[in-house]
Length: 110
Length: 113
Picture 1: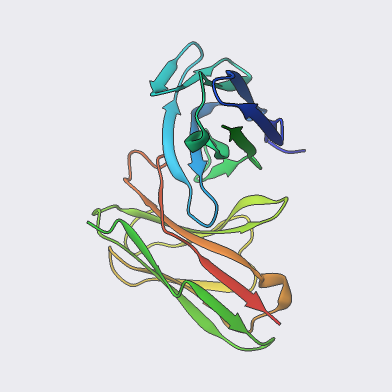
Picture 2: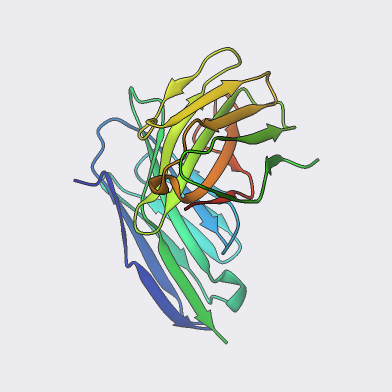
């Protein structure tokens, strides 16, 4: 069973059409949940860290939120340049490593 | 400030050949990591080095070895390449106290025929 599950696998939006990406996790003792953005042919780029339920972080058109079982990445009025794969990762208590989800590929059409 | 650099960018090997992937970071980070990324599998940790002088296995270490040469450099070696090692390899680094906030290199695309 995957510890980190992202949905949907792919999402197509029109420019300006707001939506949310989901990341659910099953680890115990969460020490942090992390969002990354990956453009084609490039390495992932760190976006946000969330540590506890109720926490929110914002950056431009992106807002990440965290509950006890999942995180959402809300995209408000997206632009074509927001097109990328968004990766979620968790750090479990007692672990020495990040566990990544498989990502959501977002395409924003002009 | 280059961040994390990786060489080479592309490589084609024949089965059984060996090679070393190089990684360097200039952010004075203590921790460094090697991942592989395959379609449908996501990013998987191969090896990591929490601090200079230490290395540990990740999720998929078989067929690989690593060397933490100094604080800046962390190399990944394939002793006898296999087609199953065809993948994109990423190196990353982080501060010791913020290990989930990792900074990735541009990747090496490796094909083993």
